[in-house]
Amino acid sequence: MTVPLVLFDDTPRARRDDPVTSHAAADKNDTAGSRRAVLLIMYAYDRPLADHEIEAIHNEAGGKYTGQRLRTARDELVDDGRVIHDSEVIGPKGSACWTWRLTTAAEREKPPTEKRPRARRSHAIANTKENQ
Image 1 (cartoon, rainbow, N blue to C red):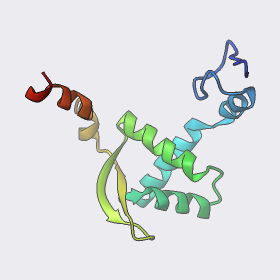
Image 2 (image 1 turned 180 degrees about the vertical axis):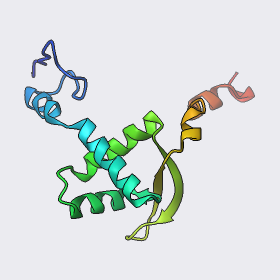
Image 3 (image 1 turned 90 degrees about the vertical axis):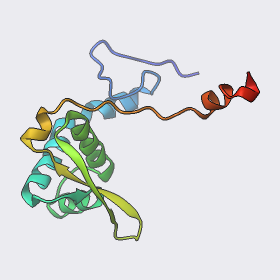
Image 4 (image 1 turned 30 degrees about the vertical axis):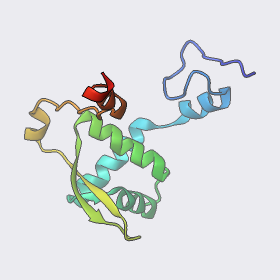
C-alpha cells in the first residue's frame, strides 16, 4: 500500500494519492510559460492553428515543452476565454482536427456560456412509461 504524501505547500497539479515523484515533477511544470508560448505562437501567426501546428512551430523554434503540455496550455487558455475553437479541418494524417484562434476583445466581454451536460442514457430509460 502506498501512503500518499501531501506537503503543506503542495500544488493541485498532482493527485493526492500520486507518489512523491509525481508531485515533484508537477512542481517543476512551468504552466505560465507554456501558456505564454502558445499565446505568442498564435499571435505571431495571426490565423487559426491546430494543436499539431502549434507543436511543430514550437519545436522548430527550439521550444522546451512537450506536445501534451502545449495542448493542456491551449485548453487552459480556452477555459480562460483567451482562445476559442474556430473550425474543423483535415489534419496531416487524414483525420479531422480542430483549429483554434485568439479571441477578440468583444468576445472576451461576453458572459461565458455554460457547458451543457451530456444526457444520461440510464436517466432517459428510467423515465419511460414502460419502466414506471
